[in-house]
Length: 382
Image (cartoon, rainbow, N blue to C red; front, side, top):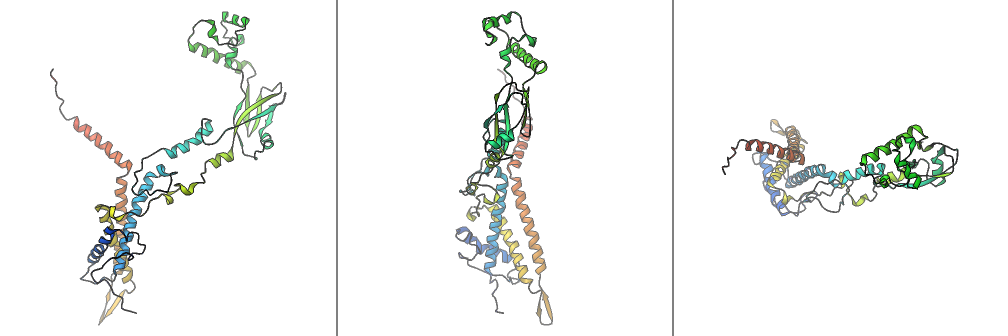
């Protein structure tokens, strides 16, 4: 095997020396690459011991460390802001974007409740009518749906317009037990269908409301109440119709509800964490806190690489003996250091989350209030 050169103690970085070239054109990365290589080699014992690596190994570890740092930071940002990002365009780079929390996802969810309540939403309510026949009480709306080109099982009735005459039209109904005697005379002059306000006697509004409620309750108990029963689109009318009439209703199509909940133009939208437009960080914009973490992570990666290299030969023979290499120690130390650094970074990011910062601000406010309570109040003498 050829004699492969190892770390000579210095290096000179140039674009193209890293596996992916993510940061090769960043001047600050170019400047720090050789410094990081020198830092890692010395931390691993150079020049007291040889370091069986080349400059390309240090550059690869440096590039991976920067990328890992960016992944952790932006993964935290995605977790923090995803509810505000979902559904937005993914055409813009968000690395340096300031995300303001919004209620977009909550509003999209509430639209479903608006649809069911009939107060808005994203699914239309359609109108239909059914011809009722005298003496027939039961009607199958699934048959009506089939006759009108609606697929089986797609119909969902939302509202039936089958109501008794309004109570105001029977305001003077003596059978309701609410007549006031003199007011019934208005019927004799053809004024019975008008508002009771024409009696020129100003009464509290609750008086009219109580009388209307009494009329409605009377109709429900003493008369054949206008009502219906709907089960699985099978409609039963109460009371039994005594003449032909049109029954009007509103309905929606289940397929439209489902289709309206799916936006198929998602290729240009943020639909999951994989297409949130964060890219690799700009190394020159990483502050000293981030760079210190990157240097330590590069050292851990370099130890891991060196451990794998030395692991190829567990012992090297020398005259009269053999030298045992520390491959296992390097790999174990590297794995432990990498885990510790990742946990440290994630803990730091969690401590700067929006929730934690608001808790800290609230705590500061409490302490400040307690501190101000110890300040003597001045006595004003006028």
